[in-house]
Length: 335
Ligand code: BTN
Image 1 (cartoon, rainbow, N blue to C red):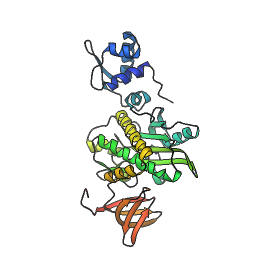
Image 2: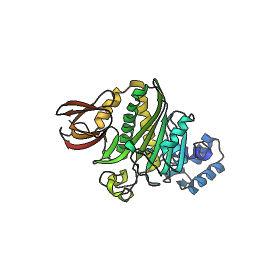
Image 3: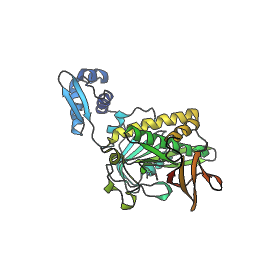
Image 4: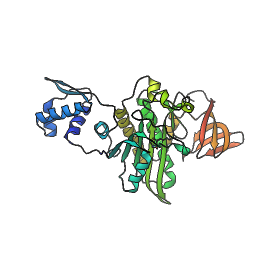
């Protein structure tokens, strides 16, 4: 199991990553990290051997030009700008499900913000008992352990927080993402990300929450089974170029942490407003499958618990869980 333990090599990488597109002199790196110039050179070469593209110019120093397409602690760690999330990272080649390992770690005392990532999942799970298609090396499969100070009945708010972060990270990657209630991230009507939240709680206390986030980053159409091709997509398909996965992961963790901090400080109000602003559900005619019963009506709002309010022929129905199908738009776009 790979955990972030910043050795000199990682510190050199972090220094180069921090400088983004700029050159950093060998002298600056050796002064800052207390290493000899020869040691800096050795670490740069070791990083190159692992697939990092590092340019070296005699008068200017070093510049990080590319990182390998791997979701390892060495790739993600130096890109992280978080205080808690991902400070402990467990990166695996393959797992049955990142949520399962995250739950085990949580039970064993994992700290707030510990993250599990896998290159592939053999039993990736979605909501409502579905399978999450998890081909190797293409996407992001990540679970985040949280220890929130929250009443258990408010835990579902965290799922909406995660959907905001996933939506924002997709937008930062250049696609027009929106959220379908409760937490599916869609682009052009096709799903690119989903969230599976699991928790352990007593009547008045949450022990832990695991936010399982799956984002289809570089999957191709052929990666999806036939029955999903019309309803699932990836950021690469939508934007026409591959996504640097480590950068996306670090950006998603930063965004998630910012939304979690806001939620902890100011409660659900600002989350609800932000969710509304990204929703592709509100104002639409929807059909909701609630435990085998179908409700059709206009999705009017979410309430202060995150439940969906649907205006039907027989009045306003409050939906706390269910599958939403978007039918037609009722309000003009942007209304
Ligand atoms: C859904 O939309 O149905 C939720 C999908 C959640 C998938 C992610 S991938 C990482 C984590 N591990 C899992 O087994 N599931 C979640």
